[in-house]
Length: 473
Image (cartoon, rainbow, N blue to C red; front, side, top):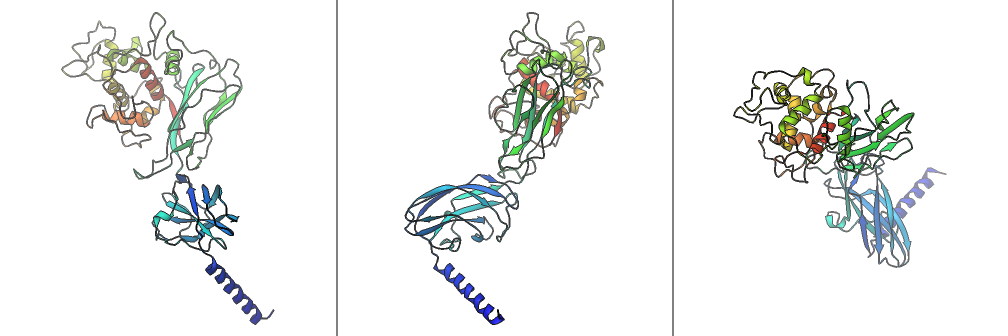
């Protein structure tokens, strides 16, 4: 073929293409488009759009979807247009369409934080050749999605609290909780929309099903009881995924090890904790010897704690017993309402000397007053901020949740607008941090009730969580 003939043919193709574009026109029809709130980032990103078309005229009608990056010139990008369907005749149509970003458009592929808009349009000829009438009219867009390219970040309990000497035995008895916390906004400007947790993708081996993990939200609570027949290697794992489909490089294992001696033994039990929301924590910590019940075989999970009882429980977790407590008040801990003959004196003096618990003013410790929710999270905060080095075999030494949760300047995995926690209150910082790291819950979405007495069951849950060993992802 000669160069002249080739040029003529090429020109003819160009003219036909121009004629096709010019002859295509929008047709009168109605349509709706629904897209996901969030979509993933990067080349090949895909969103599934639900579309409908009604009142299409007779003939061949092309149903197209256009996309644009909002704020980038407010123009449609034909290169990012894709055809959904060709409908012949007067008819209606509907379905779903996977919109795959090709990267061929003027703005490239979706990146983290972008806001994309989508439009459904109708042509009477070749697809994707007719732009909408007003390229600057936001009302022409029927669906929109933010781009979330950030994976979840968080931590998970590699183990429950350990038995004495705490570094030796992974699980003390057969009933325990694995828990985790994740966020999608740790590196994002506050207020920016991000998709949040989609699924924890929890998996386990074995011949039984642990209790459900509950709602797919930031905090995972997974209770399990190993059956008496459990043997071999047992695995509990998660692979966190956000709602935009970003998947972490998991799985992350709560445990991936063989059953050890004692792991299938029943935990310590009480007459009044079966079915209680804090049963797991109470029975597990009682097996560790960190908490105890009453002579009648009950625990009283809904009963309250005194400040003296709290000092005792905290220092037991710190590795102390009756033989290692001070016989007299250390400097700065000589309270007028704590006598050497009181059963709690050594525990109170030790908690004060360690910097975990302070007096209430006027030389008083107020040992018989009820411990409040604000006070208990403050005590846990003080454990870290006191700078005291606990005894080597203590639960507090082994735990690293405490150090993470109450580290000043640490990121907030969860936040809440507490209406009853005033800025400047002695417990304010501790409340925010304990909630952020899953150690404490509110009494509602907006209240923490810091002045409400803490129950024995609530104390057990906070202590269990605070003493859990954790890893991050």
